[in-house]
Image (tube, rainbow over all chains, first blue to last red):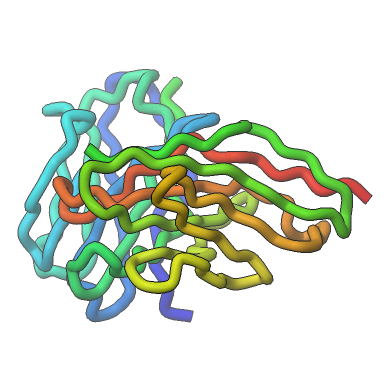
Length: 115
Length: 114
């Protein structure tokens, strides 16, 4: 199966530590999105890439968050100096094309718990 | 900005009964609407999407949704619920201002009872 994969699936960290998540999109998908989902809520957009270019960031993405997609393939999302409010499921999605009707395929997510 | 509202955070139906999950949208431009399903410990899976053309959209697993512009609605239905339909369902609209990222509703948890 060549769906979207995310690692790790679970991460427990202490407040103030840095964490990094990885997303591997479906091969040849040029768009990659990061979302955050908290309990009882729908996913919220964080940022997206077209190839290696990060084209937009949500205001939810504070300065402690940084995302990269160095070669237009996999992407990483880093959170520095984690806070308890960062506890959430972080979802990655990819699509091919770039139009409004493109289907986004989601990975299983990385669940972050900040103690 | 485009947004959706899902009415009812929890819906319970009996096996074999009609499933109706409600979604209303707000958009100043023609919306592109989606329904996703999320099973426990799994990623979001696309059920169906409306772009243009036919307003009745058929999706996977027997689900369908009808786009009604006059009511700004995109409700999801299935004639006969199955136990395996128990999951979280999300309505979403494509946000043209964010690279077509999806704006999701808060979700509706569907419980199917025997």
